[in-house]
Image (cartoon, rainbow, N blue to C red; front, side):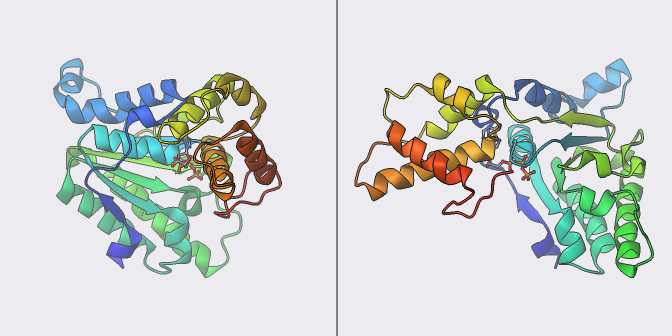
Length: 270
Ligand code: ATP
């Protein structure tokens, strides 16, 4: 099940340019992940250790996975992803071994960016540890901690993780030498939304009269993923109406639909 539990990509198809509204977070990730891969000598020269692990936290659909893929791609590192909830729900009883395999694979593939999505599924504070399921989750987390602790000499492997539930995390994973660089990835403000609208409209035939700045103002509370759905849904309306250009009406239709929580792709807004 090693193959099923891990997504391995030599060079993910995401660039920094594809990410909108979180420039500061991109900069921080580059510093913590790309710089140590590209220029380890500089860290040696200054005499500091790069961060051991980078934890991205914030609401769903804000670009956390994109950031991890982009930094792997732009560092020419292999991207290796594992999802916490799958370890707990799908690969029951195998969590600790899969975590070991994950780090072993990273060592074989280096330079590599290891990305653990939904890390809260294996690293939440214990609420009630009487069930055996909890013991298994606990073992998986202990394996992760021990892999990270024994990590110094593994070379060009960078560890990243993401969560929507920062407040639930066990403090043990945040100690120095573990996930010691925290980067918050918030929902975009109006300017960020405008940038994301532009990015997701690049390949789409959109009516040039649409005022993206004005539209972005209106998309209160939309995440990047919501904006992607909006543009796609608007395109569906254009097709349905036999047009090849997406109009402002299409976008408004798509908005009504998304705001009701129904989409073709079953994407639900948060
Ligand atoms: P989750 O917590 O649900 O895993 P996430 O923060 O990892 O979410 P991503 O998977 O990176 O979110 O984003 C989902 C999709 O939404 C992306 O593939 C992209 O199309 C779009 N998206 C999200 N954030 C941004 C952004 N900042 N700029 C451009 N596109 C974005």
